[in-house]
Image 1 (cartoon, one colour):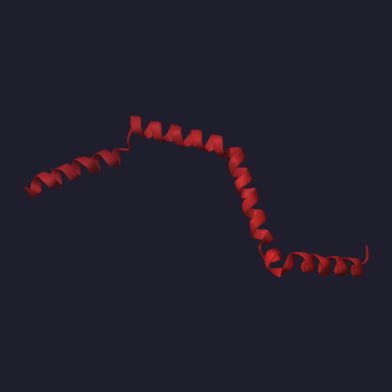
Image 2: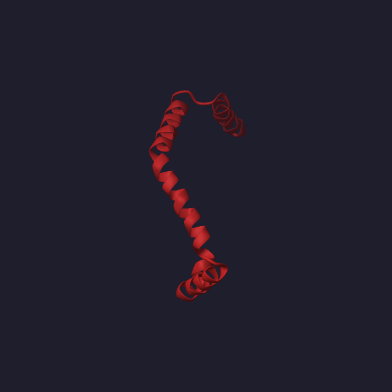
Length: 79
């Protein structure tokens, strides 16, 4: 293939698809690949999120319990 073949091929592609569609092909392809990767790893990510939520429910961080008791103290002091 010479350079002239590539130029003619490029012109034909632009005429068929138009410049508007060609402008968005890169981002559309990137989004499709990202969604595909999420689909492959989606089950693992969901399992990790559920496991983390269960762990936090069973053993909440120390700061959140202190804030809850502090809020109770503040509301009782205001009365």
